Amino acid sequence: MEKDTIQQLEQQVDELLRASRRAREENRLLKSQQAAWLAERAQLVEKTELARSRIDKMVARLKQLDEEL
Image (cartoon, rainbow, N blue to C red; front, side, top):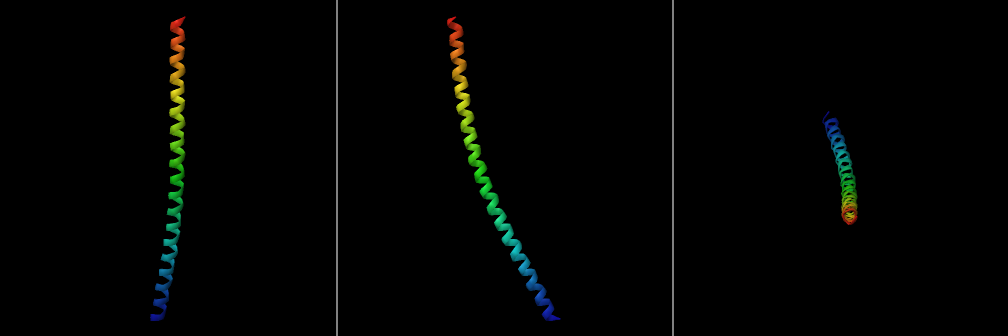
Protein backbone atom coordinates (compact mmCIF):
# COMPACT_ATOMS: atom_id res chain seq x y z
CA MET A 1 0.00 0.00 0.00
CA GLU A 2 2.81 2.40 0.85
CA LYS A 3 4.38 1.66 -2.53
CA ASP A 4 1.13 2.62 -4.27
CA THR A 5 1.01 5.90 -2.38
CA ILE A 6 4.58 6.73 -3.39
CA GLN A 7 3.80 5.90 -7.03
CA GLN A 8 0.73 8.13 -6.94
CA LEU A 9 2.79 10.96 -5.51
CA GLU A 10 5.42 10.44 -8.21
CA GLN A 11 2.73 10.58 -10.89
CA GLN A 12 1.29 13.75 -9.39
CA VAL A 13 4.73 15.34 -9.27
CA ASP A 14 5.30 14.36 -12.91
CA GLU A 15 1.94 15.88 -13.89
CA LEU A 16 2.80 19.08 -12.04
CA LEU A 17 6.16 19.27 -13.79
CA ARG A 18 4.49 18.83 -17.20
CA ALA A 19 1.91 21.48 -16.35
CA SER A 20 4.67 23.82 -15.22
CA ARG A 21 6.59 23.29 -18.48
CA ARG A 22 3.46 23.93 -20.54
CA ALA A 23 2.73 27.10 -18.57
CA ARG A 24 6.31 28.37 -19.02
CA GLU A 25 6.17 27.68 -22.77
CA GLU A 26 2.80 29.37 -23.10
CA ASN A 27 4.10 32.35 -21.13
CA ARG A 28 7.15 32.58 -23.40
CA LEU A 29 4.94 32.50 -26.50
CA LEU A 30 2.59 35.14 -25.09
CA LYS A 31 5.50 37.44 -24.25
CA SER A 32 6.82 37.00 -27.78
CA GLN A 33 3.41 37.86 -29.25
CA GLN A 34 3.12 40.86 -26.96
CA ALA A 35 6.50 42.17 -28.10
CA ALA A 36 5.49 41.76 -31.75
CA TRP A 37 2.18 43.53 -31.19
CA LEU A 38 3.87 46.38 -29.35
CA ALA A 39 6.34 46.80 -32.22
CA GLU A 40 3.49 46.76 -34.74
CA ARG A 41 1.56 49.30 -32.68
CA ALA A 42 4.57 51.61 -32.55
CA GLN A 43 4.88 51.43 -36.35
CA LEU A 44 1.18 52.16 -36.79
CA VAL A 45 1.34 55.12 -34.42
CA GLU A 46 4.32 56.48 -36.36
CA LYS A 47 2.50 56.05 -39.69
CA THR A 48 -0.60 57.73 -38.28
CA GLU A 49 1.40 60.70 -37.06
CA LEU A 50 3.11 61.01 -40.44
CA ALA A 51 -0.25 60.92 -42.24
CA ARG A 52 -1.70 63.47 -39.84
CA SER A 53 1.25 65.78 -40.44
CA ARG A 54 0.88 65.50 -44.21
CA ILE A 55 -2.86 66.17 -44.03
CA ASP A 56 -2.28 69.22 -41.82
CA LYS A 57 0.21 70.57 -44.38
CA MET A 58 -2.24 69.97 -47.24
CA VAL A 59 -5.03 71.73 -45.35
CA ALA A 60 -2.75 74.68 -44.64
CA ARG A 61 -1.80 74.88 -48.33
CA LEU A 62 -5.45 74.72 -49.39
CA LYS A 63 -6.33 77.51 -46.97
CA GLN A 64 -3.46 79.56 -48.31
CA LEU A 65 -4.59 79.00 -51.89
CA ASP A 66 -8.15 79.88 -50.95
CA GLU A 67 -6.98 83.15 -49.37
CA GLU A 68 -4.99 84.01 -52.50
CA LEU A 69 -8.06 83.63 -54.68
